[in-house]
Length: 380
Image (tube, rainbow, N blue to C red; front, side):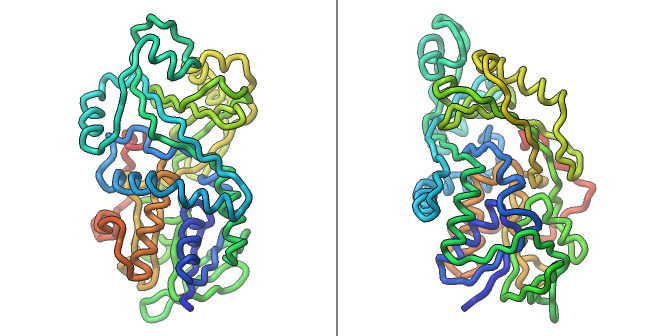
């Protein structure tokens, strides 16, 4: 039986492990902390790029595949783990996109999405929480097809699902270096001993480049902090995901409402700040006025694995045989994660690929120098 080691037990690492296990591969995951407790836990769980027309075709291809296939796999994970990831097709309402409307409409036509322009009574009916009068001249654009998952529940469900499937998850185990022989990776050296396998996958999110840079040319994957808050509200206060001026409001099944998120380049610092708390509260009440009546239950921060162009790195590293990378998903770890994992598994097992792997490969051009920076417009 083929044995594969995965470094990183976030959504990417765990979904990859699940797909490999289902294909009859023995999998061990090495995780420096606890499974699913970093960016995978912290995100909003919208199964769509926030402004999809801003992204390139490689991101769009992965997003479409994931949106189509998530319902079935989430149902399996729910059944096997007994934990509901709370997949909800709540739809997404865009506000304040007049400056990008031509681009958005073109994307809609080419990609087969339906954005409905709403004003007045129809806008208020789709999302009463906006607090608008029925004769308002404000316009929103609504697509009903967008769904969400609740990240903390998803990672818990995935972890339990993998345990039930017999996947070994070595938590609080720090990967130190690769074990290699004649230009090929044979395993991973950790602070708790050596783990050997036929192939090694690095899926360490924002930490991926740290491990690789000691050995080989490394793609630019930088931590981008995002602070978020959640209101302890009641069901019905918000009905739809609402996106306005780069801030999103997400209603959860139990009535809680998530507001996110900031974009901060502070290395690996996850400290939350009072000024951001007040700014996010203000933005939340601007979008949904009724939230001023509910307390903020929690504030937190996560580190996104930012990449130069928003396109993840998926495939074998050109310098070390049997070393693979699946990282750099930026803000889209959930929406494009499932497809990126399936694409990598296709390559590992010699299967027909779900999309053309070329744009995601670790080519010489994509193993960039530190002089390049992340496109912040894509990050929004």
